[in-house]
Length: 311
Image 1 (spheres, rainbow, N blue to C red):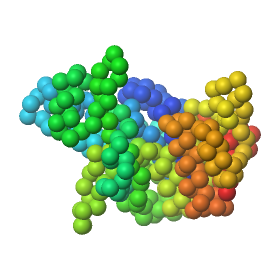
Image 2 (image 1 turned 90 degrees about the vertical axis):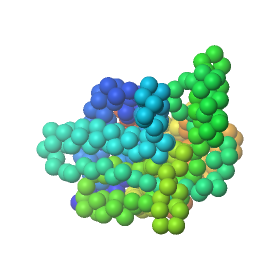
Image 3 (image 1 turned 180 degrees about the vertical axis):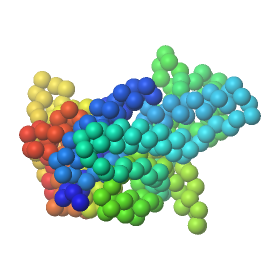
């Protein structure tokens, strides 16, 4: 069995933004993941699904407009569908890449549910924009259904859903069992399918979960050795996108919190990644977080690229 267990969080660049882009992107992603396997890492992979779940939501909504007998799919179903087809592409590409390198290792995708609090403040102030652009009339119809919409000046209206905090990973023990059996596991895709506990039943929630938040939680619950967050930049920067931009090779949790207080990290970009790192390190203080890009991951795990965060 591999010596080091690691949760790898894949961003949009690892998957592309359309079905055909994804076919090409996952082949590149599979090479980077196979590099980690060759570096003696036991992989637990999670991934984003923003473009994918929006595409599915849009397709199901348009189907309902054309064929009145069809019902539009709720967000939880769209999330489940995106987990399935993204996981399918990743596991097949990674399996093929590993076999091409003479490595025989099972790769499995687990359809993963994550519980959320129905009273989470995020449900009262939704922020995640999804789906197609709508006319004012369609937007009013959505509002009558109890959904939230947001106007994008000059383009139309789009639906907005909540992004509540994850509470429990329902299939955690199944994930742990496969990891302990030496398998590569793909789980909690797109943040997981958000569900609300109602007595003995789980009811899908009209929401999405931040994939960085679930990556940090999954890494903490499994007690892995490292959390690797792959994103669109080679490392974390101070004063990003300014003339004073400076790469950060390393930081600890206290330094990360100070930079957060200074407003150094973008709310929809780097901030969720730093918060995920902190959440993981609070649970596994002996762990390590690496933030880097796909092309630099092999050098990053050898200590020659990326940003390392420790407790």
